[in-house]
Length: 353
Image (cartoon, rainbow, N blue to C red; front, side, top):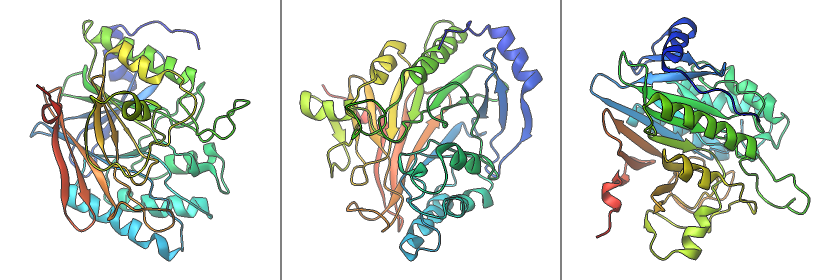
């Protein structure tokens, strides 16, 4: 994909004012506006709450099947996480459903979020398109749901690539950027038919382009960023096999099931210098956070129930809390039933001396 011209700060602000979608005030009380860039793409921007905080609830691998009693606790878990944490934004990192009818399953698992008027976005997992709807069809259903904020990005492999920004009130320049990537289903290259999907080159170029533009908007300093997607990068495995100096906290219940293909996403993040953490799902028995080469490689907490394997009990969700004027963040795991684990500050609680 050809490189497009960089964002000019004044033009960015002008486009934001002219093309922004104003008036979207979710139940959390956080202001949200859809802003446009010179690339023609429109992304959702949020503001910090008046107390200077912003909370993201990450759900992952709910594997929900409508009318299947094995899914009941998954739905109860979603409701409990929402009511206990009262997040400003929910990001689901895929494998939302696990059977037919796909549309009914999608509508039921996301209904608690819509009913509570909480904005949410989805990065699709490999299993979301395994049933009676295509990847685009399942994503179109998700985007039709109340309070879904996913943007439509064309010309890339996959359908759920997106950008969300977080700013101070009345400021145009973001303080944080959240990238959602579609890690796809299975590899489609000859000889790699048994490999999990991966983030393709045009998705990486799209990220690099926007990262570069945000950096210019910020006077040459990269804007702190988080990325969310389903299938972990190969570097999750490299950190275990190649480096004894990694720092890990949390549960390691299975080897990371990364793709056999390394398309260079981690290297791109290092080169752009903005990525603080990668947050994935896919591996139900892992919920660890690991610092490796100054980027945190993190898992969410399995949020589903008994339609799939789950040895890391009980289910739950990961929470990420950001503070205004702070490039660090807090994250913890809330378990079904109320217990909180891994309540850590990043990077302070991962320092070595």
